[in-house]
Image (cartoon, rainbow, N blue to C red; front, side, top):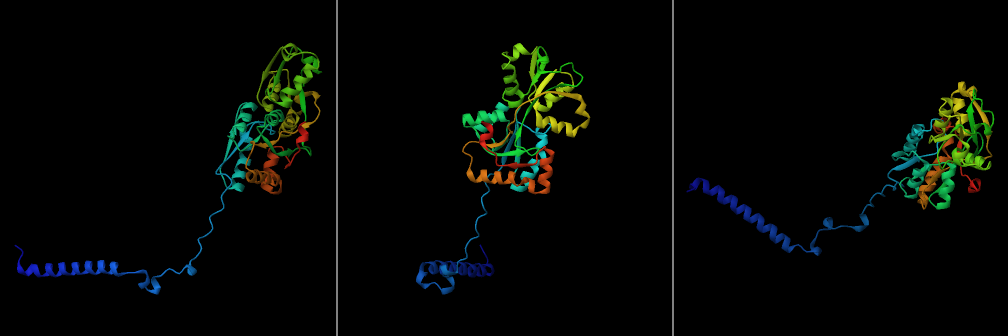
Length: 306
C-alpha cells in the first residue's frame, strides 16, 4: 500500500494532468474559424513567391562519338581536350564513344544512342540517304571545307604510278570510308578491274593514321588516305616528309562533318551548334582546334556532299 505521505503528491499530479487534457479537448471543440485571432489568420496578400526553379539543362549528359578522325593520331584520345572543354562550357558530363568501324557509329546514331558525332564523308552520305543523321557543323581546315584523298607509297619504293600498284599489297581504311575506300575503288573500277583482280592482296586498317604507318613500316606497298590527316602527320613529324611518295590526289570532297541523330531536340541542337561555331573565339578553344588540325567550325552546306 502506498503511504499517505506519497499518495498526496501523486494525487495532485493526476489531477493536474486530467485538468490539462480537459482544457485541451474543450479548447479544440470550441475553436471556430471565425473566432481565430487576427494574428493566427493567413493573409494571402502577404505571401512570398517561391523562387523560380533552376532552368532545366538540355541534357543530363552528352555522348560524343568519334569515328572519322581528322587528327593524325586517329584515336579517341585526340579528343580528350575537346571533351573536357565541352564539359566545362556545357556544365554536363561528356562521354566519349568510339567504335572500330564507321558502320558501328552510324548504327549508334540511327538508334539515338549518341548525341553528337564526328563521322566520315562516306558514312555521312549513307546516313543522309537512310535518314539516320543530320548535319550540325563542318570543320574548316587549311581555309577550306573540302578535302582530298591520296594514293601514297614509300619514297624508296619502285612504285612510281598507280598502275605500279597492280599485284601489290594495298591498305584501305574502312569499307565505308570515302577517301579510304570509295574513291580508290572508283579509280580501280575505271580500269575495268575489281580490287581482287588489281591488287595482290589488300587489308583494312580502320584509320587513316594506321594506313600511313602501314606504308611507312613496309606492311603494305601503298594506301589511300585522307590528305588532311597526311599533311597534319607531316607537320607533327617533319622527318616523315621524305619517307613518302604521293602517286595521285583526288578531286575535292565535302569534309567529314559533325552530326546529330535524326529528330534531335531543336534547342539542344542549337546549343551544340553555337558551342562549335564559337569554339575558335576562345583561346582555349582555338588551342583545342589546333590540336585537332582544325581552324574553326562553320555551318556547312549539304550541297557539298552531292
